[in-house]
Image 1: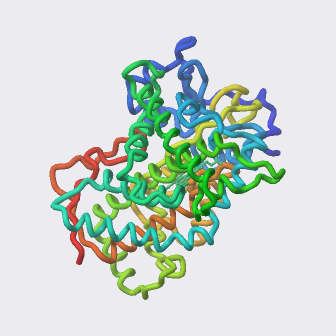
Image 2 (image 1 turned 90 degrees about the vertical axis):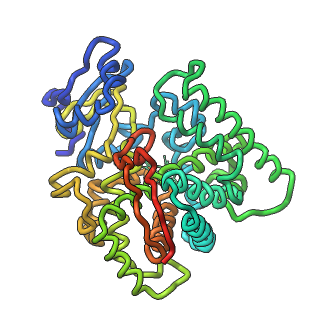
Length: 440
Ligand code: HEM
């Protein structure tokens, strides 16, 4: 018997509380920044609450997450929470659903083909080297802030052929736009949300100018924007200019904020585990130079990257609306509710990872990794028909960054800084990871 065919009358609601009528547990949620982790400790990996008028079921665990990810459009559908729709734009891939989503996804995925990624390696190497040289010349720097510029330079060149993107107005508006993306306040004057909406307009105007320039010229580009403007959907239709703008905004956002967080966590994890760093250095010292990093065998570094994304996933959850009543993990979930599949709960499951909070690259070997992904016990990039389309791009950038850093540099974290994480909007060390680095 499959989960969906169980008699619903047998199932009970998930543990937890729906709180007061209408407000639910919203006030506690606003007051307590550990609301979700406190609830998880009290109720376990699946629990219910009610926030801002909607019952929400939080779900962690491979089987349960697998059920959600493999039933998109049947029991669940992507759904914008908070201000996400007005900030991302209605045509954004992450908000499109059903056939419309699948067709767009197929088209956008072609911008991340292995051929395109392979030909971009040289640029990633060059940008990485220029940042390493710059960091070695300063007394100290905040890794998070620097990585935000680094990842923006790489993403903006790949997506819209913009050089030194981090030094442009585009990047300036991006930073405050993305600050408001996860804010829950309505767009009232002087709120982050309002500022974010204003900056979104400026961003869209800049992207529109780039598109209009291209429409009035016959020049070709090897970038994602050119592909999006040129490519046809299966029925011969092309994306409208309005849609191209929304998709580019999403790709620029997703293409650098998540990577900033993941790379910064990697630097933090390596800094705090000198034994693991020295094994990485030893591995790097034995690798012959190969211009194609994917042809270089770095099995230990591969495990370190996977473990770093397990222990600090930069995206902690995905949201879905329930289309049809069903059961998750034996609990009843009703039509119209929201489910949040939790990547962090899943990655900290003791049954899968015996010491979930200690950094241990041995959690991964190639065979186990495949199995963990298949069973949804390892989901830094989500899964199913909404799996991250920038996954290969992200892994390539992380690998080039890590191998260059580890093989060329020594560094130390400066004392008297707070290494704890702020988790919103994306995980980042509270003081930004203040570092001194030299080229060896
Ligand atoms: C979707 C994580 C890098 C573009 C997702 C999802 C996750 C994720 C978890 C699924 C969200 C859901 O189920 O609702 C990450 C992480 C990254 C990363 C951890 C880096 C370490 C990138 C990059 C790009 C990108 C580099 C593009 C340049 C997207 C897009 C989607 C997505 C467009 C929506 C896919 C869809 O709805 O079909 N990402 N991502 N991501 N990601 Fe990424």
